Length: 377
Image (cartoon, rainbow, N blue to C red; front, side, top):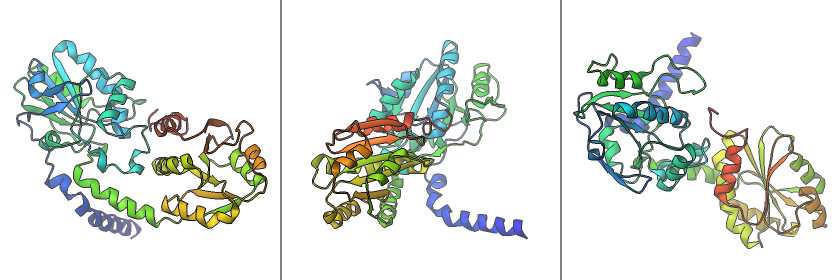
């Protein structure tokens, strides 16, 4: 009976969300085996524009739909690089296409990446990883992606010399690069096509992040509504309390920001801090803001935090001596606002900066921390 109840809960839960994903099956149909490769005209991160004709000399054409933000796609980056180098001497061409519309990505979906899926960020990832294949952007119009119909990232399509689709699905059956896959599906398909043989399993299921189609932009609106509902509080704290916060006896990576409503750079950068909180809080980041406003202006500080939807941990310093606050935060800090620190659970300061932060720099610092980074390191 218990198992039956669980099954019913699962079924009703699935039925409740199916309408949200109906477009994945109805509007974005995956290209059928035997179909001709759809043409495209897409910008590459190398400044060139690529079409199907750009690969006319390839005996086999491999089209991989992948992206920056997805942890599963990240896990396959090295495999795609190796596949490209292994099969290039055999006349196999490989091209990767990013199908994601960046505007359809929620902040909490970016928690496993230091980069989003914009064209400029694709350039950074390709350089960092040393991509040896063209990396094309289709997030603006998704015209090509709609024709191919990838289900997830990564999703691979293998075409023969006549550009007929012979295989589509997963690259292999093991996304964790530290483990050995049992079924090298994409390589088996390529070998079969090169050898003039039939492919034993021409279609396989894919595992990864759903494609962020343009119509998913309403997810962002829904997320904004949810964030606006999160409570924002402002508690008081003294110098000894700040010293305890800085020691960070929690099991989370702690981002601390000292600010004030009268500090222009503080106000200007605060949105970036809220963004960092939304990006990485589900991964184990804890954001703590400490206002240096006069305690008499607590209501003003709270209204500011509410406007910024700062639902992390917020304090206002209540001591009369601001220099005690400075010493409690960091003896190396000279007291100018804003001041930002990133602290490990063992209390070690891994980043500190006086002045407005560089959002991309701090994302890199958080991303490179052992507590964060990719799922598969």
